Length: 203
Image (cartoon, rainbow, N blue to C red):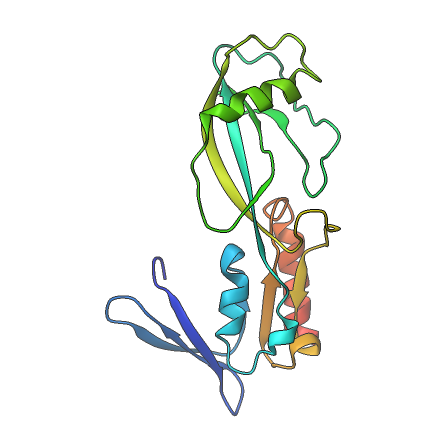
């Protein structure tokens, strides 16, 4: 339920779960299966499931990326992806649904959910973008938006794949917990759904 905080989940003796939700009024629900995919909150949610082994919860990191928008006409029709940076795809070029040119994201590890964009980073972006577009006009970038990715690796560490944890991993029937579903998680959503269904059926 939208804007309803997850408080805890308790496995039932005969299978299934009792889920306690918070917020105004609160609520208690029962379900036969439980799939958790809360992105940045994956580790916290897993810790609130009774019986979930703490040593099977992977460390989580906040990987912040910001975007800058180009003032003026978009210079290219196609996507441009330079070589990736450690831990991410790196700053690339695309057009949004309105046809405006957007560059990003970079990658900076942060401790809290901060979605501000520092205008001073434009100089850093300009330097990087001119590696594949030397004709970028001076002062043509304006701050756009920021996002935070639920990473499973810290700075300088090898980037792992998504983690889908079923019964064989954590020992709880009917539970699938997803960790580190960052970009390209949306692109991979159908394949992820098939993998989750397989874990539900076979552990």
